[in-house]
Length: 218
Image 1 (cartoon, rainbow, N blue to C red):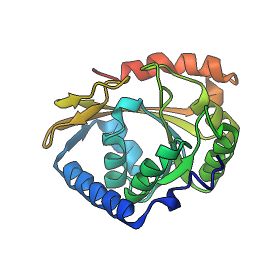
Image 2: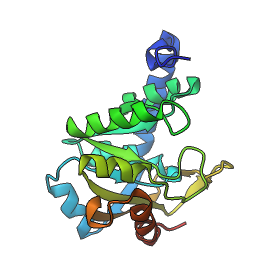
Image 3: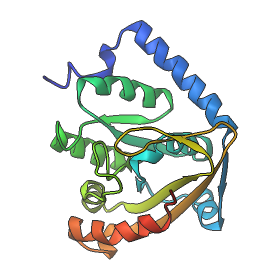
Image 4: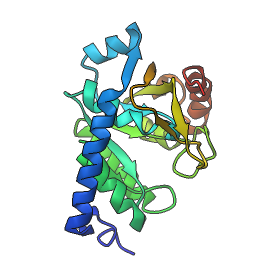
């Protein structure tokens, strides 16, 4: 099946309307969440760093766009969405939330997705990637995000959202859905250029894994 058939533009008007309503509800839900962070995160918010590769675990996806859109209004964010037929729904949804969807995965349309992500980063977007998504295993630091960072020279930022209260879905990643009005601790590790770790994606990913674990709390 071609990418044209998988395009989010093929959703019907009532499906787009439904997603617009869901995006509004998610924004309203997000306004009830209380994000807290330390001086290191505040310094990153206040600074104007170059477009980065932002890495977080798949099960923290609910909070990530809400935090980013609220506190990084001056920055643009691109994110990878599955190229499967079902990916049309989340692609439109993240666009409703203010992000730029790039279609692809390591299972389908992978090389083109890499090129599109590199182009987005060079066009001024931060690139958000979940190294253990979309099929796991949980907390597995695959090398795709590091590959993008090495090809672009973009700095890497590790980001984690630790929930004080949340539902856990019965999915492969035990996905977090935070309770309304709950507290979310934001942790960050500003790694800098990936080349300072290693020029080998697998080796660099192995070095990033303990640093990601250090800011993650289940």
